[in-house]
Image (cartoon, rainbow, N blue to C red; front, top):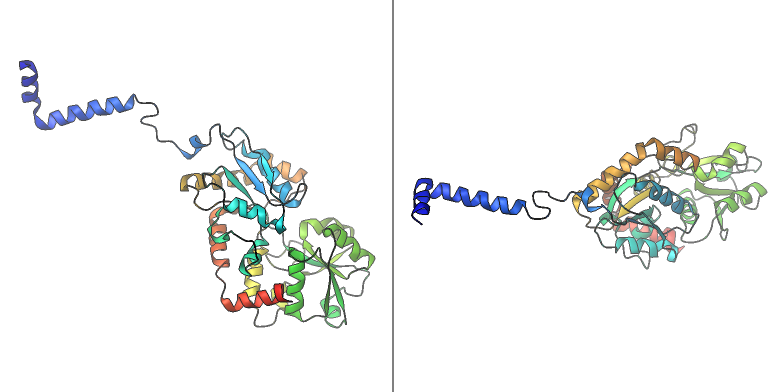
Length: 348
C-alpha cells in the first residue's frame, strides 16, 4: 500500500487520470470490433440486396432492373441480389411497396417516370411521394417520339393540323402513351381521336404500318428498329434532349401555345429521364452515398456496358443527387396546373 501511495504521489492527479484513461482505452480495444467503426461497405457484407420492379416479367423496366441485379454483386460485398416483380394496379402496387420498404438500404428498385404525372393529379391508390424517395441514379434517357407511316397522309405537322381526324393508338387509360395522346390533343387542338386497347407499343406500330391508326407515341429505343427499316417515321419529339441524328425534329414545347409552360417544363423533366433507381425515404446517408457511387461506377464499367449493349439496353447516366433535386422541384406544381392536368388526364 505504501508503494501505491508513493506512486500516486509521484504521478499526481493529472497523471493518475492519464493512467486510468490509458487503461480504459486498452480495455476497450480488446472488445470485439472495437476501434473499427462499421463502414457502409461493411454493412453490406453477406447481406441480400433486393431489387423491386413494378413491371411485369420481360417488360422494359424488368429487363433493366435484372441487368443491374446481375452486376451489383461485383461492386458490393452482398451474397445475392434477387429481383421481385410487384405487378398490378397500373404499377402503383410496386411503387407503394418500394416507398414503404424498410429504409435500411437493402431494398431498392426501378421507378417508372410516368408516376410523376400520376402523383401530381392525385391518382387514387398512390401512397408514395416521389420527392421523398432516396434517389440513386437514372441509368438511361429515352425520349418519346410521335411516329407515323411514311405511306400515310400525315407525314408532316401541317398535314395533321389540316386534317379532320387524326387517330393515335394507345394501350389504354393509365399508360404513358395514353396520357401523351390526351396532352397532345389538349395542347395542339388537333382533331385527335384516341384508339385504345392495344397490348403494347409493337402492336401499335404495326397498326400504324397497316393504316389502322395514324400515329403512335412511344419510347425511342423501342421504336428504333422500325425507324431504321423505314416502316415508320418521326414527326415530333415529346421532350428531353434532342436525339442525335434527329436534331431537326421539332420538340413538343416548340409548337405549344402560351399557357402551357409549366406542363412543358414537367414533360421536359419526365422525358429527360427513363430508367430511374431509388430506395425508400430515410436510407442512412452513408449507405445512400455508397449506393449512388456504385451505380455511377457501374455506368462506367466496361463489362456492364458490354452486357447492356448485348441486351440492346441504352445507358445514359445521371447521378442520384441530381435526380433528387430534379424530383423535388418537379413535384412543386401550382394548384392551377394540377387542375389543368386533372382536366386533361382525368375528366376528359
